[in-house]
Length: 123
Length: 305
Image (cartoon, rainbow over all chains, first blue to last red; front, side):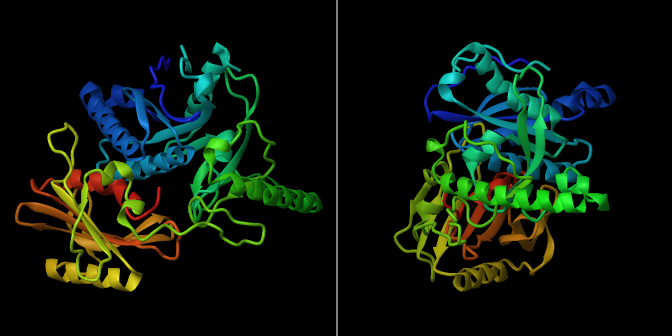
């Protein structure tokens, strides 16, 4: 994934990135088709958006099975990640046809060092 | 530090940690754990120094775990535990790790209440595991005394500002409550919101439990029955912040076309919490979306942010 985020400038000097990624999405798509994959991605997006909003973060970008979000508070970012994992597990238990096994990575940076970031991770 | 490579690196570390995380796992950089400090009910489990593609320096990563969650074989201590010949060395390492941990915890807790002052370039952590416990944002001294200030007994202190914007404090609170607010979320925004939710602040656990039990009895829902979830909607049970960490109780039911969920969020001697009773109602019987709205908001309503 290559990020070229247009991140808002307001907020505190130190920001915390949270990146989430659905595990096995490509294989899921191959096995169950585009329609099921689209429903899985939509569910992922809804949960991410909901929790990030609630934890006062911002969704910078969601591309299918990957999401980039940013928080003014590292505490809120970590709490949001745990909230996400809890909901992903509950949603997977409730609907085994749409398994949401998601890895999450978190790091922080001073705003001046990343606000105009032209590129990000390549995987 | 202001050049493009660092900018890329800032995002790269999060992306690389994400790629290394197992499904259902959260990995954070050491700098992030320092910035966040102690978090109630959570602990950081050291995953060691990692070489990340595209990052010049090794990054120490931590897995975020529930405090009561059993650790797995990733622990450094587990690595040594099968060799009795290493016992003396293990003890020495344990003593050293404990000393470093103590220093780190003091260092962390002293910073936990003010992220804006945290520096991302502090001393390296040598602890195998940083266990965080106690109230969120607490500053625990070396003697273990909690110095955290108690959150005031007002609803606006324990409802997130984004949610509080929807609320209006009522002139007359519910019986035995200190304060009651009715909240009417904006509709037709493209995002789900219940038709109405309300929250009351109570002076203690006894009164909030009495109010909860009265509401449950009125609704005709039995204690420890049924299920409240996306798929099922009539029941009563306890909810937890994490494994073994009680948060409160909830019940759900239908009243005509209305899906209703009622819950407590208990203080349990946490200075950051207050005893509250809340209710949310969805008029279109869409309990699945109501449940998703409720989760995770029930963790936030009743707790200072």
